[in-house]
Length: 187
Ligand SMILES: Cc1cc2nc3c(=O)[nH]c(=O)nc-3n(C[C@H](O)[C@H](O)[C@H](O)COP(=O)(O)O)c2cc1C
Image (cartoon, rainbow, N blue to C red; front, side, top):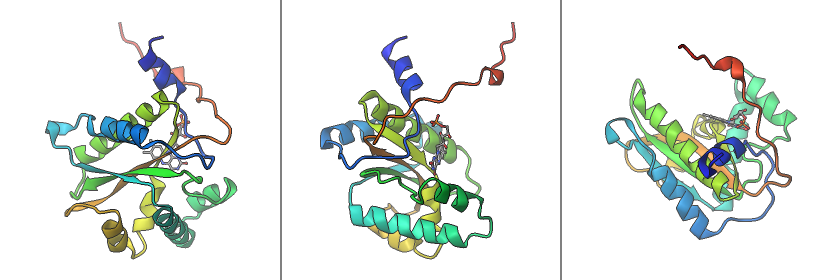
């Protein structure tokens, strides 16, 4: 296996981060990997925001959990509670990816996912644990969207997309086994 394939095979979603922080040099490298992602027609309909501010991370988490707890379908909330009641798992850093507003969304969402994966793989390649987190969207669904857009310095016309949580695992996890049933070859 070459280094790229080892990185892909070694990535897993970390859900328990230690307090250890990342270097600014690593963060810059990881953010740049996000910016290097391909996008439909090279539109780059994303904005990448590196968040180290603990207060802001805590505000997003508190609001996200509050909104989730009031959501009629309790499945997601119960799942998060069963995992320790944390949306961001104590990650010291979040790379937030805002996405250009569009209705209906098409390629923007695919571009967003590819950028998130670039970030996750770049982090993994540097030995930094990570977790793509879509549930951050709950923080924007309860009336505080404008406040968070301002605090996260969203550009005009951008809204919540995804985030990638970054840090160092409390205890390193193991990558999930791949499912060969999902693979078809046609000769
Ligand atoms: C678009 C997307 C959103 C996700 N959102 C969350 C999330 O909010 N919280 C979380 O713990 N994991 C989240 N994950 C991680 C998935 O649960 C994880 O990728 C999946 O269970 C497979 O596990 P693995 O990443 O360890 O291979 C997300 C993954 C993707 C691709």
